[in-house]
Image 1 (cartoon, rainbow over the protein chains, first blue to last red):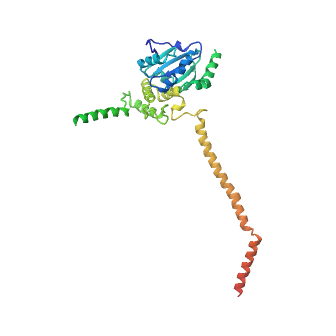
Image 2 (cartoon, each protein chain N blue to C red; image 1 turned 135 degrees about the vertical axis):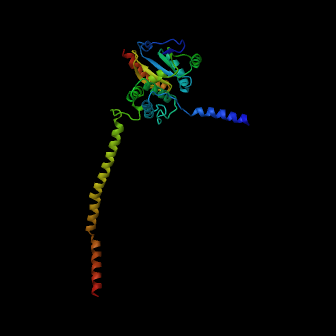
Image 3 (tube, chains in turn brown, orange; image 1 turned 90 degrees about the vertical axis):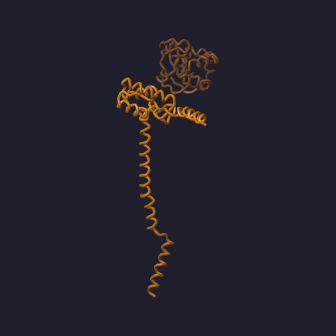
Length: 133
Length: 164
C-alpha cells in the first residue's frame, strides 16, 4: 500500500483508528464519484474520518481532482492496478465500506453516498460502531 | 489514393483494439491452461452479471482473469481459486454455487414448484373423474318427467306404426 501524495508505504495501522471510519473507493474516471464528492467533504467537515482508495486511476489526475474539489480524506491509498480493490471485493466505483475501531469491515455500500443513503443506511451502522468500542 | 488507404488501415487497427481481448499467457502445463479456461467460464463477472469473466471485457473481469492466472501459477487448485473469489465477492460470483442455507432456495423453490404442479394436476384429475363424470352419469340415468313422457310417446307411436 502506497500513499497517493508521498508514494511512501502505508502500514496496516491506518485501519486501526480506535474509532469507526469510512473507506471510500473512488476514481477520477467515475462520474458518480464526482457526484458524491461534495457530500464526502461535508461528512469530513462533520468530523467523520474517511480513508480514500484511489482505484485504477492515474495519480496525477487524482491529485489534481483533490486540489480542485477539496480533499475529504485523512489519507489516500494509491491502488493503480486495483489489486487492493480486488482483495476487498470491489468491482466498481464508488464503493464505501464502514470499518470499526479495530479495522473490521461491517458494511459495504455500492454506489454514491448522499444525504439520503447516509441518513438511512450508513449512519445507523456507523453510530452502532461508535457505541461498541 | 494510397494515402487514403493507409489512413483507413491505420484507423482500422485502432478500431480493432477496442473489441478484441486476446491475452497471451504462458501456462506451466496443459492442465493449468485447462483449469484456467474452466475457471474463467465458471466465474461470473460481478459488473456485467450475465457474462462470465472469460467473455466479459469489463475492467474487473480483466483483473479477475489476471488474478485467476496468478493464483494458478502460485499452485492454487481450482477449488482454492473459487474459494478465493467467493471469500471476496460472495457465492454470487460462481455459476455453480454450493448448497448452503442461503442458496437452498435456488434448489428448493424449483423442486417445490414441480411437486406443487404434479399435485395440482393429480387433484384436478381426481376431482374431475369423481365429481363431474359421476354427476353426468347420474344425470343421464335419471330422466325428468317431461323426458319420460316424451319417451313413452315415442315408444307407443313406434309400436303402433309396427302394428299397422
